[in-house]
Image (cartoon, rainbow, N blue to C red; front, side, top):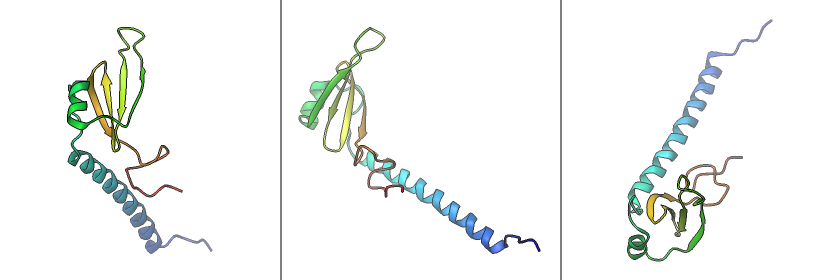
Length: 113
């Protein structure tokens, strides 16, 4: 006698995987909304403008690059909640910091086991 999976068990498995995917999307959407609500430095601001508007950073990391004109110097300023990336002396991006260095998902997301 062969054992066939019941329709009920298949439906349960499908709903479990669908619920997991929706939960992950919701977390990502929450993270994007959080970043948009936070007033991060915008592209094109100078280092002086960032420091006057947002205060002194908690840490200024060592510059990277700058070894040729094709690899401009990249500076990183770390604030409590975000890091600002500069190409030479202009903002190219600002991103929210992770809760911990090994964070796998959005801020405050439960850690995967």
